[in-house]
Image (cartoon, rainbow, N blue to C red):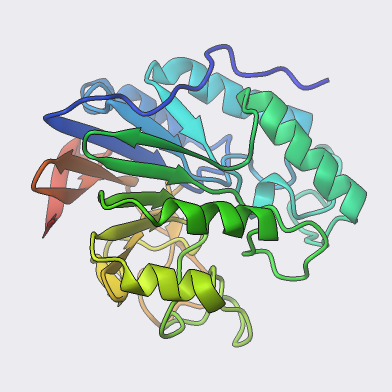
Length: 302
């Protein structure tokens, strides 16, 4: 039986002057990098809110893996919410003690995928895989990969896409949190393991049109593709219209440093990218947990 997190998730804080939001993506716990992050207490305490951006489990979303996630969350001591990545539901499980653990990546059948999504909700004490909260500084939308039975891992179900389209009507800045990145006008300029995989959410039809015609800025925060801060796609960029793609670094020291890296590489250090939001704009700040200092900062004014 799954044991839920000890602290319940919360809605976005209603700070009116400034809001600092810290996403963690692709931790794949347990990893030694987690202790480096947890030891960086002064930095963690700067965050008003934490978003677990998917792939917190190591591989197959087993009960043992969720135990490692619970241990990490229990030490974080910050308000939080979570969205599901592909590793939370897509792969059929291999026994934790099997020599094949972490070596086989076969898609689970529909029933197992549904079971794992229910496990995700139960563990995080969430009522829905998608939800939205308003604050004085913008609308925050949280989306989970959830297309049961689809061959592509980076897909949102039709009900979730309909929910997302309804959220676009706000005239506030829109902050969307999803494990996979967004592609509107052109595919990512990298190869994700093989030439065929786009590794991205690819909206079409009225949803695509609604995203492109929004005048207020839309920021899409994601992980999944494991980008080191040195990668040339790491700076925030427009995916189309006034829609910004924001890649968050992996939090396990396993990422793509160069465009030529089809497969992530192990590297020294561990990084986060947090958001500092105020009434006039948002700063995207890269932080080194090993050095305990902020690195680059990118500002987008509203």
